[in-house]
Image 1: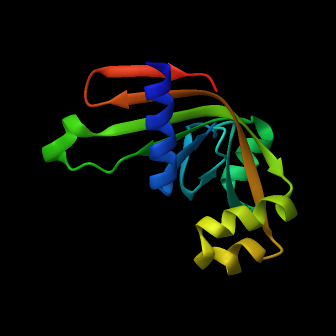
Image 2 (image 1 turned 60 degrees about the horizontal axis):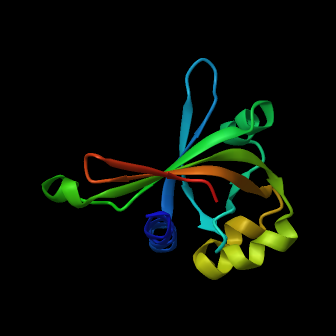
Length: 142
């Protein structure tokens, strides 16, 4: 079961490119649409952002975040949908090291990533929650 869960999560993170990041804002949770990349070992997910954003300000105050990634199913086939919630701690990462692999996945974002005010954020994954259809929920600690 764990091997199947791991493979499903790997597939979703490889195939999907957008996710909704939730940070702890004031007074409400704050969500942001991001383009993400993950490492093959499932231990890290990373994304670029501008340094003066609400999401980065929230991460500096409290690094605990969640990222929701789904398979984009239509309402008519919702029972076939999968969603992965990534739970972990986010921090500023080494942009020089992370930009190249990120741009392999998102070459069209080169101008954004290379902007001097853009930084890279790394989420150190603590747990994945996989929801399949309407009822099946499994967890994976990488």
